[in-house]
Amino acid sequence: MNMRVLITGGAGFIGSHLCERFLAEGHTVLCLDNFLTGSDANIAHLKGQPRFQLILHNIAQPLEVGGSLAYVLHFASPASPVDYLKFPIQTLKVGSLGTLNALGIAKAKRAKFLLASTSEVYGDPQVHPQPESYWGHVNPVGPRGVYDEAKRFAEALTMAYHREHGLDTRIARIFNTYGPRMRLNDGRAVPTFIAQALRGEPLTVFGDGRQTRSFCYIDDLVEGLRRVMDAAVHEPINVGNPDERSILEIAQQVLASCNGTQSRVEFRPLPEDDPKQRRPDISKITRLTGWQPRVSLDEGLPATVAWFREHWN
Image (cartoon, rainbow, N blue to C red; front, side, top):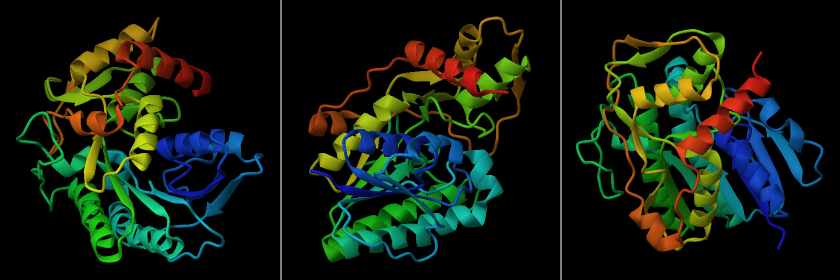
């Protein structure tokens, strides 16, 4: 069946891959973005397709969408520390007003709704790995609070629409994701390390590099999100790769993947409220959908480096 799907933030890193996935399934995609952090280049190859439509709009402002919709996927938001520290008010607005408007569209169209939440709702966790039942350890007034609390509010709002209006909602808590179409300058570990290695600059590791993250390749993430849309679950669900690595180890793997680079690791002071550990408990999504990540870091990193080499200038 040909569905019409609205994806806010559709020109972003994850959003553009979702646009591609739904088009490949034969559906019609309405890609909404205002290009605050998204990129026209991410969707340039989709624009000629008759089932693809770009809507240039800020979802924090009201919007009426004509015709029917089967799905509304809300991915609009700055997502990297560089972006949400640069755009703190816009981040709070898209997490609050943007989520409210996206939910309103889903309610009016009786569409299934997916909120792109984040592992950042767990803050600097005191429980490891992080299950969905953990409420988090977040500093609401710290510099990262604009993103963390925007997503926590968005989750509360989504659950309120489910309980009050019976809206068919999903909440995906997305853990660190990497792959083609990330911005070299978005400030997150993998693209930053790759950009530095390609330029022959020192790889800046904050703190002693022992803080951990768990990186999921974009193809795995999209498959996980697609399965969440079809799962009978309304409460939050983690989507990520439980393969936990230290930031220093990631930097060293990037150096190994960037053949010929003269770069070396350089240590810098740790930013305020930077989480020390991050690893998802994915037992819930595996139990409900059978999903597990398939692409290892040893496979995904070289593929990402190759993409950046091709598109970097």
